[in-house]
Amino acid sequence: SWRWGGSLLSPPKAPVGWKQACAWGWDVPALAGGELTAVGPRSFTGEDCAELHVHGGPAVLSGVLRALGRLPGLRPAEPGEFTRRAFRRGKLDLTAAEGLGDLIRAETEAQRRQALRQMDGELGRLYQRWSKTLTRALAHLEAYIDFSEDDNVEEEVLSQVDAIVRALEQEIGAHLQDGRRGELLRGGVHAVIAGPPNVGKSSLLNLLCQRPAAIVSPVAGTTRDVVEVALNVGGYPLVLSDTAGLRDATDPVEQEGVSRARDRLQHADLVLAVLDAAAVPTEPAGLGAALGSLLPPPAPPCILVLNKADLLREEGGALRDACARGDPLPPTTLLSCKTGEGLDHLLELLARQLARLCGDPLAGSPSLTQSRHSLHLGDCAAALARYGRERRRDLGLAAERLRLARRHLGRITGHVGAEDVLDIIFRDFCIGK
Image (cartoon, rainbow, N blue to C red; front, side, top):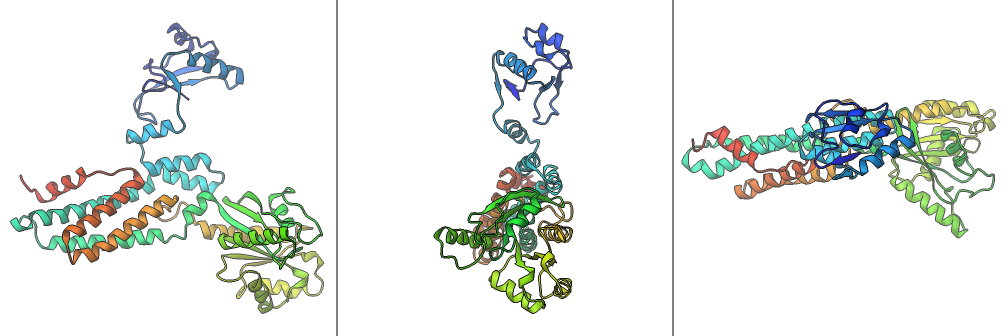
């Protein structure tokens, strides 16, 4: 992308061919077969822009860029400059700009849907509605502080402000309690394959990603470091980590691997707990105890994978009954990494867990997608909570809490201003007419 002065390429105001471009003195012979198009101010950035449509061969592109580079005042656009200019001209707010970035980086269908919803401005409109509500409450409170002695503002205004603040605090609190669905969908659900040595953890990783990503060996303790791959399961992003077998190791290198495995478990969003199907109890209580010794509480959401099902004999029926029974076990499946038996059921359980963790990106209110949103909304909610305490002592301090809450909302969308408050004061109360 190349920009000349205030726009990408400014001269033409109507579509022109490459011959006319050359008549302007532009040495652009590589544009044969292309077209120069002028776009009015309703463009993405809100500026007059021009687009060059050329063949995609490396030599053609190189020739065009060399020719454009010889034009005075023309320079390459900085990273993100078009989106920054669109933000400055009010074409989109910060949440929509972040949605555009997420859309560019989206690798799964669910990520694409969430990014499109945010880029369309739905999240920004939600925050703008809250900001307008808070602005109105602040304006009414300040009007009461400044003009109540002149009988221009009635006493009931304060109770209306209190009701608005309480309702907004509850709505923001509910928005924050979304289980990090938007963030998990945006960055991927971090799942850890955990279990004792030699139960087939690395084989499971290779089976799921359909390539030899991890070394498989009959020697216990082969995996020492964390092996990580990114997968698309049912349209949801999954970051899957294979870890060292959990045991009391004596080798210093293996001890470090076990330590890293336990650290990953503490921060995992989902665990694939792998046990040897031929070496576990067949009743649910015994399976639950074996799983509990592997994952000390509080354990994240889990799928229990009983691997090496091809080695089962008469005990296979009892284990299948235990897997189908469910409670008190988490979702459980029999699997053979050697034959692939049970893989479809595992993928079904995995997709179900991912859908539960990430939610439907098109259902309900838009989800939080950025940690900075959570930070500012948390600070906003805290300021609203303090409003109630300050309100009983000092109205001036209470108004300052509302200003602080409004400022945090504005920092999410990039819109922070004071004129809106004055507009509402004089519009709603007709003061000074």
